[in-house]
Length: 413
Ligand SMILES: Cc1cc2nc3c(=O)[nH]c(=O)nc-3n(C[C@H](O)[C@H](O)[C@H](O)COP(=O)(O)OP(=O)(O)OC[C@H]3O[C@@H](n4cnc5c(N)ncnc54)[C@H](O)[C@@H]3O)c2cc1C
Image 1 (cartoon, rainbow, N blue to C red):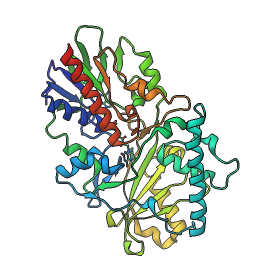
Image 2 (spheres, helix red, strand yellow):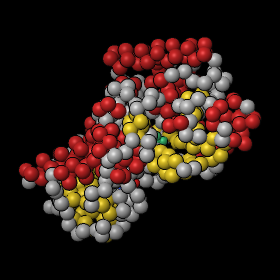
Image 3 (cartoon, rainbow, N blue to C red):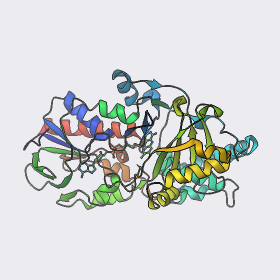
Image 4 (cartoon, helix red, strand yellow):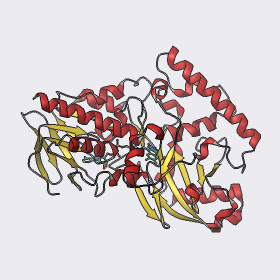
């Protein structure tokens, strides 16, 4: 829709948080608009069509699915929620990783997590890496797992923040795509696409927002852009908000990227299985074989490895995955694999990464980032969630919280 000159609330960003905030404002019958810099809805939730399948290059798993608001919304939108268990809940295929070695690794991982649980209660904040067993045989694999979970290696992330994350352990998927669910849920919202916000001037009685499509006046703003973009001042605030920028800088985005390969002769592998990339290399990739039973391999890369491959150019992820899978399974696999799609979230100027982690000593920055300013500026992206950060449902909840704060503030004014 064309940009109005006045609304009561402007929501900045149409990802999971912005869509959730918009739905809450719609239910409250407020006059509002969602401003989105991209030409599409969803942000880091993005389903692309390739090889005849809807593929999530951003979020894919409904984590804590039994209490995840997107599960209900997807079902209400007549989308298919697939309840089969995730591949990480069962042993991996034994290419280069024997059943006995997997058992040993699982034990080392359980002991490491036990140390983290105890540590967060006893100590001041420290990096997760402090709790590795010195010289431990499985340390590099634990690093690799951290790059999937946190988007960074263990030395970068806070133990207290990590331990604050709460998860029900139930993981489902939307067959049509998580990104599809979030964009479908935005259907009834008023939004302006290709409408990057450049400046929020909150010095006057009303807020003045400068966008790529002109100027807008509002009573309240809900900011849902990624924390790293706030820290880098990709949106400027007048007067400046140094405390907010400092909090956002304590919550940078880690990196995780996905590559999808088409797999001919798929029946040689069981459905929903997985293969670990090179063991004992900190940058190990992970391969989910035949998700939803499709003839596809979903490859997951995190941390430094993902960064190196993004830097190496567009085809680097596919080439790496095909080489590694051929070396693990056998060279006859090579001609059966074809690149379908890849992400590059760090190179994306409207994301700059995949999901937030807290630097050691910054475990309180999520609450600082989420706190409203003068009851007119509200914050609600994934990084603001106290217990479900990094996820699309955490973003949803943070978006709803920010919308409710704005509704209450406007009712008082
Ligand atoms: C590879 C990958 C795998 C993931 N896997 C999972 C998973 O399995 N399960 C899960 O729950 N989560 C997962 N996540 C995380 C999840 O995708 C995010 O936490 C969530 O989507 C973030 O939502 P958000 O609304 O906070 O931010 P975003 O989705 O980033 O939305 C912010 C929006 O703001 C827009 N924007 C930025 N700057 C401006 C500006 N100046 N003006 C206007 N608009 C602007 C952006 O374009 C974007 O649309 C994954 C993420 C990635 C990248």
